[in-house]
Length: 297
Length: 297
Image (cartoon, each protein chain N blue to C red):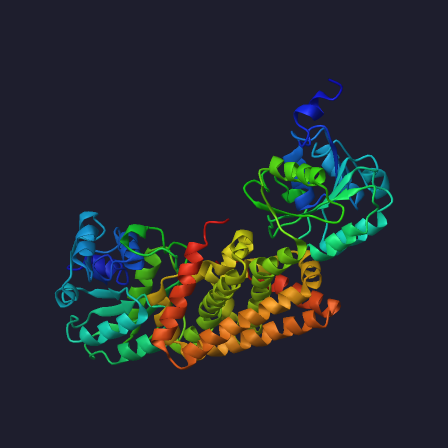
């Protein structure tokens, strides 16, 4: 009877103090999503104005720009920044985390983050997280309570993960309405190279090639329609976030680009030799695969 | 006072009989959009059931499967089929069009269609059309009155175009709420290779490469999110329609693919040598170009 809550629901976050480090779109949305689930939510932001705004709007109970003071009392620390910033924070805040606390992150690549988590003191726990809910807008103003609802949230074990720590972070993720999936970090990064970093690279190269073509004839931008709009949408993603993703997953991304180029070369060859039968089979297989795998989002 | 309507509004379609050949998504939607604007709208469909349905739903005043009988009395004939079907119809129906009538089409490439229009008898007029309002769904059931509203509708002159014919088709296009732009056929096809056929080719090759990767690890389809969904959307387009587009614009498309590959090679090289400054500049330029040119849709 001393800890009734703990006994009834040992793996919920309802008795835990969660500190979110970084109050941009992802961090601020997470604070809103966890509001009715965690015992206390506090925030840390780089800019004083962001910390003030998050507290003033009631997104967090309190917010500070003092990273060490902010994370020290927390039971769960969520690092919500671009990947290389997360890696730097894991190093600089390493001695500050409360013994027994659980550290997680919202970074889009996992191998390098998990390596940094493996170097944390033995007194803390760590679980890698990747909730897949990108948008082209950024910042606290774009935050929304339901950003994570129905989205995929990938969890990765680290050398600092035990079953309890994994279950706590899984419970945190599920509190937001996200659907969790456990993957090891290398497999995560290889699969995400295809599912996310390759589409981004193609979008960026498409916009770059079209911008080059527009130097000859600016009218090209007047005849882009919904197909171009959707194919190029992710090219407008936050550059710092995407730069960190590409640089921390460079091998898997360049491998995926090479595989893609093989596919594009096949298509080009069929078209160059006007192979109608082969081209129809190629296009039909792709259309079928897209329709068959359209239900996972 | 004999022809008051004609005198007051010589370039409207309000006194004209429009026959739409092909009652799929594009043709049936056009019939619905023109309903309050043309004097009479009739339809021609390959399948008897489609003709019956279109008439039963009041999309057209009458519909037939007899192509020659359908187009013979019309003042304006709109060919609404895949590109190579349009080209074949221009040949087979060539002697059937009423003297003085105006032929147009809804095809997505223009060079080969305009060449076929140039071979029409001197007694008829012809204007190439390309309304840009694709969807991944097809058929009469998907038709909607507002499909063309606010969309770009490109017009191309042919050897059978005079100012009057151009103005009539422009008036028809604007009746649907579309925004017209005149381009010559070669320029149209070159620009559309970048704006539409290249994005389609990339989507198809992306899905093909991901399908290949899924043979090693099917989990890849579980971690695709909104970025992949949007980048791959057009890969599910109607295969016959896209096959005709690629085969009637093969040179411009393969040239655009080569330009794209140059851009992707640049990105890959920057990533392979971990050139952070160069990579940031490349990604920033693409994000800026995408944001700057996001208003044309």
